[in-house]
Image: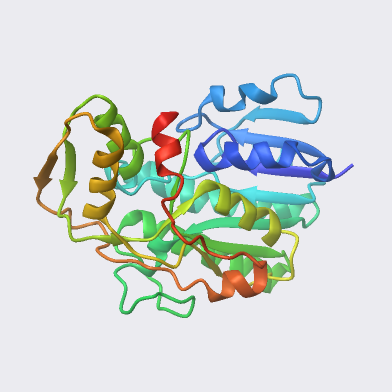
Length: 304
């Protein structure tokens, strides 16, 4: 039977990916690896008792335990990470050890376990501050913060393992993903505050961000890992830029709770503008960008 691994499978994106994999028996047995630092056990509850699901409480920084689970894997979706920019800055050591050393461990264990195909969940943060928009995959990479730097390192290790050892790696550079089960990022933070009739804290206010739904990201991942896109980084986004103040006003209009905007100084580590060029996503994954990247915002708020 096919063996599929999801590192970070109890997290925001990982648990939505798990929903999709469980619904399709061709993915075989699904092994979730998570240390439950940001992942939540309740995200796995809908699949409790499913004979195809195996949950391993493992930290990817610990190679020996990881290696045992990855033996004879066919597909590895590597999502486990310190995935929050501010969180990565607040805990530099954990971010480096998880995002860089952890990714190296996953690649090393994958090679030792039989050379499966590995999908690396990278980020638009690898581009740093955009030199031009929309940003295509040929834009220079380097990162503006420690999170972006860690993702650059992860991509380089994927390329090295592919070139030196023949490990098939797929790299997706995700824009700002939103959806249910997320926390600690701008949309969930603002939804929380709007629900509580608290003001939305806006740092700066000049940012323009490319938002993409978690459902679109899951589609991209499941298509990409089975497609002929090895070694070709692909942006996954909407291809549209949403001004951060427009997002805030849209949430206020949906909520009607009396919340206002609380303007604070910009944070130097945050990228001011990013819009993904998504031609490669459309051509290689046959995924069309949405007409409205925030179309699911109202439904999300209603269920929040």
